[in-house]
Length: 126
Figure 1: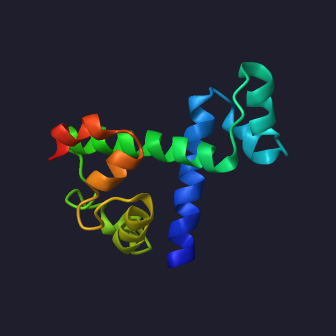
Figure 2: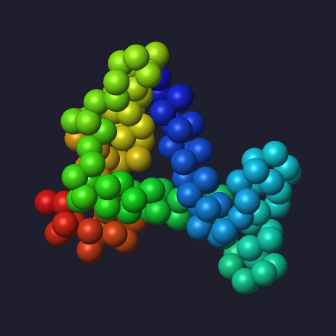
């Protein structure tokens, strides 16, 4: 549902942000980790949580654009039914809406690309 899609968006964004820093996900997930304070102490960036989420969303949107450009499409490439027990396409559509992607094909919307300063990707997708 709506709450689940929002949670998936936030989790994905935070994980992409964490991965981009080269941090161990195991330590980050299972500890109370002052991530933003560490970044400020090490490199001097005074980020807030919204900036971290937007950075993670930018990374995931760029990954999504690359995947689509290379011809991999979760909507067209169905996962075998015997391996899935949930309606992943409905969940995926909700996730796409929260990420600012077209829920029917997973393509990042032009407005989303512009908002994330990824305008240069538009020519590869549209």
